[in-house]
Image 1 (cartoon, rainbow, N blue to C red):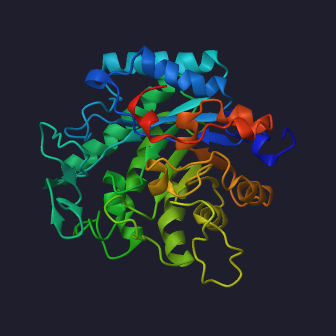
Image 2 (image 1 turned 135 degrees about the vertical axis):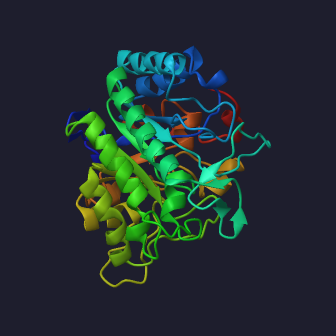
Length: 369
């Protein structure tokens, strides 16, 4: 497998990766009092030892009231939490890995278990989904403070020695709630009828982050069409709408678009002639010229719904993946649940030992193994 495109190096700015495999961010919620510790550091180090080219941490939240929706989600602010993240960075680097934090604000979303933060949850219009009120609408002062909080977190990531930083703008969380017409009913400059108008909040965050980290620090933005509130939701129905959505974000300073879809092998615009069956990441790369990461049920026998029920062979879809990467459809591939259950997944695939892959097991979500 050593000559497979999946194991070719990738370089962008100061980011030098030995292969194209990215450990996808996966919420673990196992940071007591918001502080990552040795178990978290060891968890990420094992994936570096298993040859994942780039590790993206679980979402870690910015310094805003009610920025997280589960009590075990780690902070990315405060002396103790940042010291914990320094321990994670050092552990991954000691194993020869590269790592970036996924900087996050959960907006008005709910999580299972019924936990509620001390402060009211916030979102563009006080909605968690179309027609579903929850929490408060953000003031312009709230928005400005949130933009600054993302920039401070990115600057801290750079200072701590992370190799890259990712902003979570997908899956119905705060940034995505601004993108989505169903949850952004604002009449000021952060709202609007078009996706381009509703992207201003994200673009402001990207510009602030870029100013904080300088021109040479790699910046990733995770995006999606689907939302946890509505799996069928779409922000862009056409390539033109996708261009209006994504080009301003790349112009603002995004280097890599991390394009999340439920199944990476599905075409994004299947009814457009000449599309060559490009998936979400393929279209994003074609329309913006930016590097892209694709993600969605890699190595699973079904999509992520089936995976959480215990499905997952560990090898499903790999031939399709190789074909797409060989034709340059996207640059990197993120692997989530398969890597969660098998820290050696990348190493085994490179060595041709696919018969030894463990496959995803839902019970592995309960521990940092």
